[in-house]
Image (cartoon, rainbow, N blue to C red):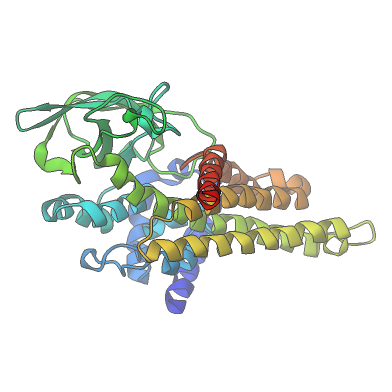
Length: 394
């Protein structure tokens, strides 16, 4: 693991970071999918490509705890996760397919994805009043027909959809949309849908502040799109259960990658204040600056500690719902604080393209929203606490 972490660090900083900085973290400006292919070829040659992938797909089969330091080094560059094959949504889809796919589905979808031959997308989020933070509001519907299913609905904010080879699509197969805890919370199914499926259309890119995700965040429409029975992923009406197989680990790998990005912003800021003199001394010798440095170190250390707790539970086969919610909520806010303080320490340079801090601030802000906004996770954490104490009180 030490060798892999070191090799990943060396590859990202020598082969990826210069391109990231040259193009201000804008993946399309840097070359988009063509750049991805080129960087992933270099990552394979360096022995650092897709270490999380199952061994039978050419990966190292790393567990969650093992992934953390490797993914953090990959995340040091905004392009690093893409280059090393550990970026969302492909990384999470590899994890899901490894746990749920049939042998035939592994050969058709998982193997090419894990090898970096194709990209994928996970189509869950819908415009209001459809599924967003509340997945039970799922409106996209799949209707049973002879030999398969017909899918109709609309999705958006589907990361990587433009250029994806296939979609893992969540659609309602029974019940009606409803709030949490209602009958509407069940009845979803996952479908494997090649991008060439008739009736599947990538409509447009939804404009967002971040620019480092290849394939953008897109609106996708399904109009009488037929899916054969063989392409149902997992069991019918069990989609929400399988979604948890993906979401908990995916939240934690997000934390890993963004910890790397926040650490870079912090290190850039510390170097800046160490070399910058004002008011008769180095900025690094001023008490207010020292407090920001210390608070950044604390937030980074606490993020890693909570991440480790959640990853140990996941590696033990536990659902880890509480620990992943706690880690994701804390990290989303703590890493934002780290980058915000780094911006402040760098002054005018912190909001310029002269340093990488501003682009990291731009890219990390959405982390407090995707994979569950902080407020939704807090609601879930509080409900569990009330339920636990209620049981203790009898």
